[in-house]
Length: 353
Image (cartoon, rainbow, N blue to C red; front, side):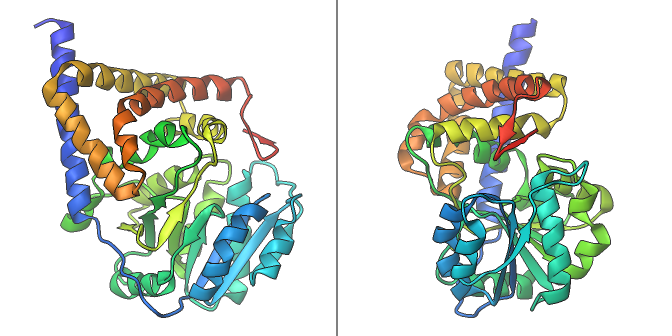
């Protein structure tokens, strides 16, 4: 057999494996249930997030006992908005110590504040661009009661709120890759292995274990800190539970295609942190796309992964029609991100990465 034939069957097999992973995730990942009780302490790093906090905080302060916002040198009144809506606000200068990225520094400051003031020995780090539903607090309490003795770290998959068209078509590849390549459900059901993953939008920590591990300080210079922390926890043998929290928790990562593109330019390269790694991932995406377009088996398997992702994230159903385009953009973004990072051209909220 020639190289093309071998590559065809390898990539077809990869699609089949991804479909199996996606289906087992759909069946086996635990799901939260809404509850009526309030729960604990939420920590939010925020830099120029006034608009997002106006959407998040009114319901969140009803669901939890304490919300602490670290205002990281904002210029849009973030701190004033958070305070008016019932959060405790700590104001940072916006100047980062050498070697730190903004979010890691903000989360580390929040942890030190929570150590002195938290009303609960579990802390939930949330991004400001998230939203919660009625029943969120009870769902969090239920997570801790059911799984907290076994898992010192818990993270979750949210419902994804689409930005303006065509942003959902582009960004579909992000949850698709995660749900189709990481066996969250199998790791949970078997009790073996490690997902090597946390979702920085939603990470719950047992406070004592947080300071044993010091995740943000140990990864202080990382841009894609949640992935790096997940890998660190795997090396340290710390168990992580991934939960479907889409019934009570959602996120709108970006408002439009331009924001999504800039955000992914900042992040995507750091999945591997290597130019050759970004190149290999791009080639894999292009190869998967090519095989999907010529092989009925690969196309059917790819459709399974797309449907599972659509159901899990609750994105609009019309996204299903365009998922091959998103696979293409997954490869393009890897190349563009590597190029931008190497040239020092990636900026986000006034900081260059």
